[in-house]
Length: 219
Image (cartoon, rainbow, N blue to C red; front, side, top):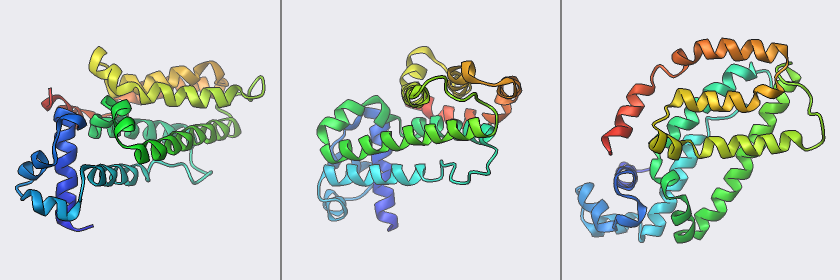
C-alpha cells in the first residue's frame, strides 16, 4: 500500500476514535492529513470506500491472532491472543463504540463483520477443543455445550471496550473475565493453570499502560 493511502487510513482511524464515524467528514480527514480533499478522493472516492479500506486494515491486524499450529501450548497462547484482541479494541475503539451505526451505514462491512464473528466463534471452539485435547478442560457434558461457550466467550470479549469505558476495567480484568467463563469446565490440570495465570497476569499485560495512555488521551 502506498504511504499516502496509509497516512489517510491512519488519520481516519485517529479521527474516528476521537469523534465517532458519523461525526467525521472526508474534508476533516483531508485537513488532518494535511492534504487537499481532491487528493484524498483520488485515493478514496467516497467515505464508504475509505471506511472499507479501514476495515480491511483492521482485518490485516487481526491475521496474526491465530492458533493454526495444533502443537501450541494452547493455554498460555490463548490468553496472549485474548490480551492482543483487547488491545486491538483500544486501537480501533471507534468500531466497538459505533458498531450498530457502522453496520447500518456500510452494508458491505456488515456482511464482512458477520463472517468475522462466525470465524471468531469457530476459533474459540477450536481453542476449547485443543484445551480438551491437552487436558485443561473436561469433555462437554452434553452436545452443543461448548458451542454455546464459544459464542459466549465472543460476546464477553467483544463487549469489553464498552465495559472498560463505563466501569474503568483494564485489560487484565478482561482476560480474567475470559478465564472465569471457562473455569467451571476446567480439569484439575486446568485449575492449576488458572491459578498460575492469575499470578502471571500482571506480566502478561505489562505493556498495557502504553496502550491505555493513548486510549485515555481521547477522553
